[in-house]
Length: 80
Image (tube, rainbow, N blue to C red):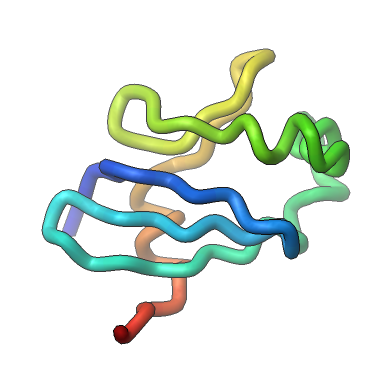
């Protein structure tokens, strides 16, 4: 099932708090990706914290983005 990202909140531990169109919130850990390809640029915490929602997913400058289905599937549900 495909859910669009509606809100992203970058955290200091290189995780993302994501709110999806269905209202569900999930925490996605970016640390395993920081040594791979274009994601290496996100090791700079200033760059990482510039995460934004773009075209239904999370994106950064320099054409860095992440598949919304992977964010949903790989994210841990947040229960309030």
